[in-house]
Length: 125
Image 1 (cartoon, rainbow, N blue to C red):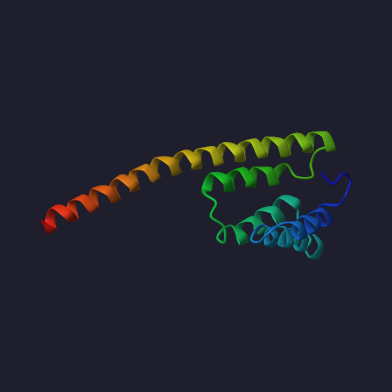
Image 2: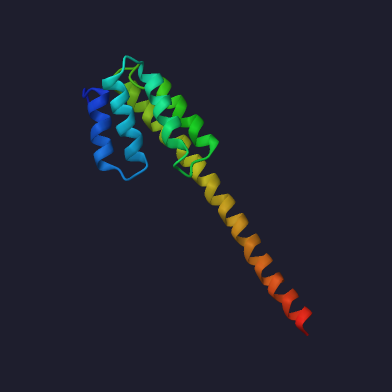
């Protein structure tokens, strides 16, 4: 929460604090805001599309971030903080779903590995 800092300054500061590829995203967003005559929504979406292929995020996360970009800078400070918290809660839900899928597939892979080993032993006997 940077208060009344312009978006391009806030995104530049975020880029310095984050690791890649998120830092690349905020750098690109800052550049688009300062170097071209574009809207915040368009700059956010273009930057998101540029960097997205370098991340491991899925389509659900892309949509959440895209929706957040549509509201960025359009509200007062209090409403913007609510939007940030809402986006964080949506991303946390996506993270919980990913962890659930990981556990499910992890068990399946362990079982397949065990059964494959057992099959190999039976074939060798």
